[in-house]
Image (tube, rainbow, N blue to C red; front, side, top):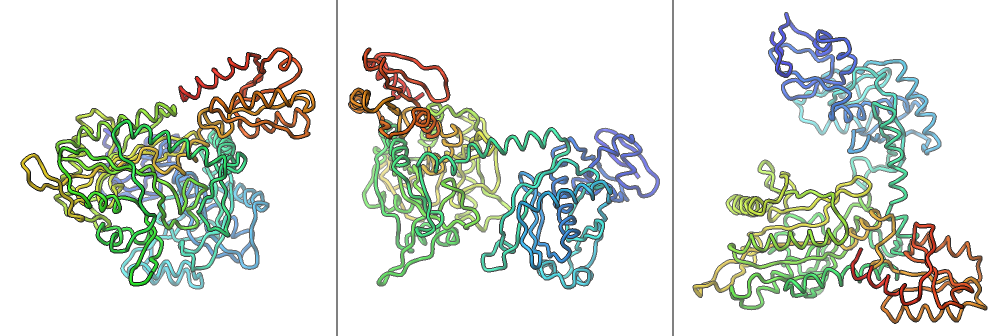
Length: 639
């Protein structure tokens, strides 16, 4: 039997395990192997190779290894919980993007984070036992016999086809359904941490029973675990939910409704400034701003295709008189109707309609995340109606606008993603294959002509067309989609949109959907986390905190400074409270106010101000006029 290992061929008599193949190369390789790839399929190290095959070993330094390690650590945690509390039923326990989780329920007990140490100690004990996970394949009836009495596992098994070959892994006294693969021994699992505990509905259905879910993380090296825990602390410091509350940006209340943010005065200032900023840029490029209602007739969304393809993500319809309405999930149908209300000529093209629009989507409660993912949000949206010959120029202008905005905000770590339809799963998209192929090729050609560096992602297209998404890497290591440009031949067909072309004949326009800041809510969340709440001066709700040392002696001069700043369109506050000076200064720091002015005898006598910039220790004394000019220049430059 021939085994191809990279560029080398090794021959073996009869069948052989992956572990023995690795050993035939070196004992050190065998010790480092986590799993093997056999003809493109991941396998455990005790997998028996019985025919000529291509083999690649997965060692602890390969990217696939960390997912296998985390899934195996999830099983180790489940085994530990079972040993500690006995009567436990387990749901699922997959590896996830960062770490793993396991769902479970213990009769008569609810675990808390106080129980983590006992679980981790038991996990370390089992790790030292060096238990070997054993895979067993079985029929559906055999699986039902083995898991008889386990209501969660039997439900999963009963949902499988009758001819399904089911696999399970046994580890010590613990057994669970699992596709695998797993690490060769629990001794590989040494550097792990349980992170949090939460509730989780069985199979993600809010109508089913509530289980508990413990999240954790596992690494091969101790340094990687320590680095990750440092990153978690950094994330906590940057969490926009914490910062938003601390800075008075937004709030939520269950009485209003989950996922429905309320913007406090400071937050409204930030939103207004962002709206003015992007609308000014759009106006300079010839966009026309409109305002459309936040709900629409269900027939509108049937025409657009949203009702058939997006209904589950929309709020339920409301029957009023003889009509049915729904809160809109996006704005394109309204803009299509607005365009169709008038006769248009090619001379108007490209015709750019823009709106800061309120949209609503039914997000699962478990997916709601501060203002990053909500059920009500505002989009910086636009629809550009153009001739096919103008697609390249329109895309170029939109890309340049995106890059201009990113330069203003100092965003440099981003990638362009060409999001395409998955040809093997076309049910969730509407339109015919010809239009999809045409629009995808058109967009790909435009990107190539513009020399834009991009990568392709199947299955990420909008249901009506391909798009270019800008994936920005956040300060805490997450990829966030901020901007998008979408090419659409479908909606003009569905709404029967036309224009008069150069020959005086009716023709069909193409629509380019685009969002630059995307959701204003998500953009603010991103900014708070990028800056740790230290917003640039032009966006800061309060730009200057004026702090008189002595209210009796310095209030009048502090008032004059406040009025001077207000006169120059700046946003100051004066702290008139009868508190200690140190307390006032520390609170201004906590509120992330860019500049603090401490007003004392010297400032009053010399007609000056002494300022300290946020995050700096040095104090600088200048004239009032110099300080005003300093701030005005920074605001103008949007540093």
